[in-house]
Structures are given as C-alpha cells and as structure tokens.
Image (cartoon, rainbow, N blue to C red):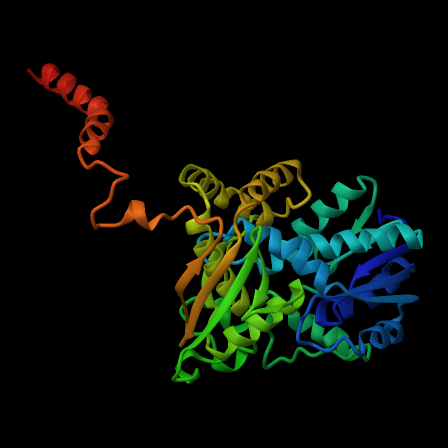
Length: 404
C-alpha cells in the first residue's frame, strides 16, 4: 500500500534524475513538493534551478549557497584526518551528502513536511548516505526513494519521460554520464565508463587539463596552515571556500588530481568511477608534509592506523554516527600544533613538496645531523637494539631447542 504523503522536500539538483522525480512525486502521491538545491560550488549555473523547479510543479524552491559551510565544516575536518578511501578516492561526493541531508531536514521541519526524497539509485552509496543522515536527525521522517519504486529503470527511460513531460534536462543519449560536482571534485560514472577497460574520453574532464597539455614550466605555491587547516595561499589570507577554489584553479591548470578507480561500494558491488580533485590533491599532500614535522611519531602512527576506518565511515554514510564524531574529536586533538608553511611545486599532473617550516617543528637539525654532535651517543644504539631484539632471540632459541 502506498504511503500517504502530504508534503515532501526533495533534494533537487536540476539534473535528469531529480527533474523527473519532481514530476513523478506530484503524479504518484498528489502531494506538494518543495525543492532544495545546495550550491556547493558545482560548475553548473544555479541561475535557472529555482525557475525550472517551479515550472515543473514545485510549490516552493530553496536555492542556498553553502560553499563556505561545506568546506569549513565537512571538507576541512576530513582533510585534517588525511581521509582517503581505498588509497585513492578523496570522498568528494561522500562528504557533501551529510550537509545536503542536514539542511534538507531543517527545511522539512520549517515547512511542516512529513517526507523527504532524493535521486539516488537503488544500486549506489548515496541512498545510504542520505537516508542514514535523515534518520539520525529525525527517526520518524518518511523517505521516498523513487529509484527503488518506479519502473523507470534506466537513464534512457528517464530521458524519454522528461521529453514527454517537457522537462528540460542537460543529459543526452550521446553523453549519458552520471556526474556529481562540488567545490571539492567532480565524478563521472556510467556510459562507456562502465567498461573498466575503456579509457575515459578526453572530453569528459572539466576541472583539469590533461597533464600532457599542462604548462611546461612548474609553478611553486606556499600554503600556510593553522591547527591543521589551510588559511593562506602565497601569503594571502583566504576563506575556506576561496582557498579550495584557488587550489582547484592552480591544480586544474597543471593537470593535477585525476583518478580512475574501481571502488567497492557499501552495497556490495564494485563500481568504476573517474574523478577530478585538483585542489584536494594538493591540500592533502601539503597537510601531510606539515604533519611530518609537527606531529609526534606515536600520535601520527596511531592516527594513521585509523584513517581507513574514518574514511570508510564517511564513504558508507555514517557522518552523524557517534563513532565518526569520536574519531573526529581525537583527530582534531592531534592538529593543535599542525601550523606552519609548506612550499609545493605543481607540474604536469604532480604536486611535490619542496619545503616545510613551523614554529612547532619537532625536527631538530642538531639531532638529525650526520655531522659531529653532542646530543646523541652512537654507543647508546647498541643497548637499544639488543633490548628490542630480546624477544626475537628468545623465540629463535625456543625454535632451535624444539628442533633439536
């Protein structure tokens, strides 16, 4: 039996899926639909989103600029942890979903809506990310997931539906990629990319030039950190969103941040995705360089051992879970001295650390030098080695006795 719904707030991008969903919700539930569109720095213009939503049947359309909130409260916390999923993915889509869901739920409360809806498919991770966030905020909210209900089982079917209803959408039969873009990245899935042997067409990339076409001269940049967050670029103070936008420009110019991966989705299948994350790639490298001289060894190693779990929590949609908050508190404690300046060279798809300095540096040249010093006796190393080897020696003696 179909759930009765009076008013639903739809996470609306204005793309193919959510444009069709807006009309489908109205026809299926005879309910009022309020749309919410978040400007997270995606390259597509938001100018006509409100007009298109209202023309398609929405009773009200929210379009909000959340770029600063996104970078400050979601991107930077994850990058303080050097979060990366399966060694390559910088979580550009995963980090954005909890912010969208949180604001969507706030609008639902303000509008007196009894349901929320999203355009995530029944095969992907986003359905989990959205719905875990919804239910963490309001356990009683009704959720409409059209991809798990309707008979429009392909993007071709959606495009045909849009055409029949006069809904303008940017996707075409010739370029049927599923994309997600924000200030951190842009992703591409579907179409010819579903064959992992097929090379991504050059014309899909929008944030970066090909490394082969990047400038022949390297460019140096200096990034200043304060408590783990980048605060200035080449001496100029920038807001979080301004910082990431400028790093995107520089990284894109030099062909930095392209990855082509087959990842393991939370729902159980493997998926091929192509990503562009130019600014994030630079930022993560610079942040790790800053930590290399400001973090204690054991603190760094303990934190690093938790990065895969932390990244997995974000990827799987557990941003609002207590274990993610607990890890974040621990990670942020490690960042109190991660302040200083890192110098990077950008060249042909690579970002290379050229120097780092900090008032909190634990690196001591007088300790580390290969020249004569008065702070370290080489003879001390003998006892250190023998003590650390004691258990290994005992183990070998036991093995030898058993063999004899």
